[in-house]
Image (cartoon, rainbow, N blue to C red):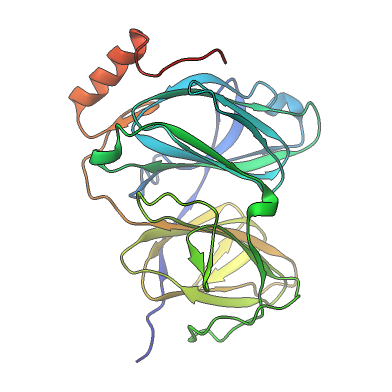
Length: 299
């Protein structure tokens, strides 16, 4: 039986804006063209060679009701939170934070010059986990599995042969050909893969028709089915059995693939608070104003 391919059904480009204390970024999910992609609430790409664009970072601010993921491509970012967690991630590292019932945290660059580049993704939580205990995990680059991949036939679900070729995939969350990423959250069974494809590289891998997902190209040009995605393009996918990525150019192409189980629940959002009802949002605001949102230690 022929496997059905996941296809691009919408192409979205990010909107330039700033967040935190003036950090310049592109908002891809969470803007007018794509408000949300259940279970994903927001996707930002931040990056600059100029310290003035990022040095002020993201000073202490609250969250409730979802998870945040920060993935560093280049540079150093530090984290501190109200639970007492702290850590630094560098090139290729990521942090996955469960805001749950409430957390106050900061993310500050740990450099004063050079390039800082990465992504922040917000992942919604189901209603019965929105008031779960807050938590934080930082994953260093060496903990992320990297598989060197050979081109595979577009219609095959056989695992590509793992070999020392330039093209590779980094498995941040979920599973790729039997290899699991280091992130163990089960809320929406997320998959987060980072593909680095050399010229004319071609790869096919299993996807779940139960998920919603996207491909975001952050370097080069990549073909996804009938669609050609340029750097800065996000392709919203109609998910099926497999996804085929093809770099038809001579240069490198890099892209992230992210998917998860949709929650199909009502969303009430006010800035950094994401709940199911307006009453819950009002309670979050009240808790924050009264200093009871999070158990606070000095940041």
